[in-house]
Amino acid sequence: MTETMRFSDKLPHYARLMRIDKPIGTLLLLWPTLWALWFAAEGWPPLHILAIFVVGTFLMRSAGCVINDYADRDFDGHVERTRNRPLATGMVGTREALLLAGGLSLLSFLLILPLNSLVLWLSLPALFLATSYPFTKRFLAIPQGYLGIAFGFGIPMGFAAILGEVPAIAWVMLLANVFWAIAYDTEYAMVDRPDDLKIGIKSSAITFGRFDVAAVMLCYAATLGLLAAVGVAAGRGPAWFAGLLVAAAIAGYHYTLIRDRDRAGCFKAFRHNNWLGAAVFAGLLIDDLLRRV
Image (tube, rainbow, N blue to C red; front, top):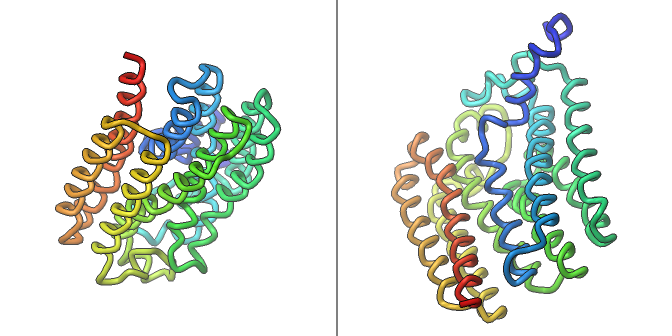
C-alpha cells in the first residue's frame, strides 16, 4: 500500500507519525527547556538561541515519536489507543520512518551548529537518549525515568548555550524533570495498563501497581520541592514560589482525575500537565519582570 501511494498522499500520515496533530509532547519537552534558558540568561535569552531551542524541540520530539512508533510497530496494533498509528496500519513503511527520523535529527543538529562546542557535544547524549528511550520499555521497570532524562536534556543544553557551562543547578532542574516525567507519564501509562500487561510492555503504572496514584503524587511533590530548592539557591523572588504553588494546586487537581484510575480521567490528567509546566514558567517570567521594575 505504501509503495503505490503518491508522496503528497503520504504527507498526512507522516504528520501523524510525527504527532503534529498532538502538540502536548512538544509542550512537555519545551517547558523545562524554557525554564533553563530563562534561569541561565536571568531573563529573556538571546532571540536566536530561543528560536533554535524552540524549533529544535519540535524537531527532536517529532523524531522521537517516529522512532517510538518504529520500535513499537509490532505492539501498537494490539493496543486500543495506538492501533491506528501509521506504522501499525502499514500506511508508512519502516524504511520511510527511519529516513524521516534521520532527516529530522539532522535538521536539529544543523540548527545548533551556530552555538558553542559544549552544546554540540551535549547533543550527542541527547540524541542517544531520544532514540533509545522507546526500546527501554522492554527491560526497565520504570522507563518513564529514562524518558524524564531524555525530555529534560534541553536543560543542560540550554545552560550550556547561554553560559558555556552546565552549573550544578541545571542538574537539579534535570532531576526535577525526571520526577515530573514519571508523574505525567505514569498517568499516561495508566491508560494503557491493561493492554501493556497483555503484550508484555513494562511501565511505571505496572511497576507501582496499587500504589500508582500515591507514586504520582509523590513524584509531583519531589518535582516541586526540587524546583523550590533551585529557586532558593538562585535567589528567586515570591513570584517564582507563587508559580510553584499554582503548579501544586494543578497537581492536586490531577489527583481528583486519577484517583479512580478511570482511563479518560488519567489521559486528561496527562494532557493537563501542560498547564503545570506553564504555571512554573509564568512564575519565572513574572519574577524576572518584577526584578526590572
